[in-house]
Amino acid sequence: MPKSIEARIANKFTINPATGCHEWTGSLSTQYGYPTISGPRRTLIYVHRHMAGPVPETPPPDGSNRWEVHHTCFNHRCINPDHLQIVTRREHCQIHGELRRARAQQKRVAARLRQRIMEMAPEQRSALRQQLEGIQAELAACSSRLQVLVTENAARAAQVSEELRY
Image (cartoon, rainbow, N blue to C red):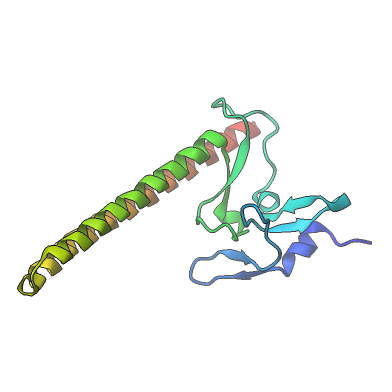
């Protein structure tokens, strides 16, 4: 008798103590690198979708065309149910759009820093250190804002999911 999906998943991940992620050690999809196991009749089962729980039967209320699983930890190999969230396609695009904008902001700040370093004389290095501290604070603010947005989206998705259950 074949093993259940849960039994097959149980020994194919390790827990990262720093992040709490259950990092998949089994096979990954070739297209996006998500955790997979083989299903009946040579089908592919995406483990993170299985671990996230049941997807609501009703269509998304915001007009999106489907439900998706979002990794709140941004680790595609993670299958920890606490790090997985069922969101609408629109919400998922919004989350990743905000992430892309935050990363682009970080790249712009780093580029400005590199430019300033190249333009400065050696005696201006102490002033550069002070500017660097300001830029690092700006980067920390971007990261903090991103974390707030992720948390807000997680709460919003949990609320929508809860409303759909009733």
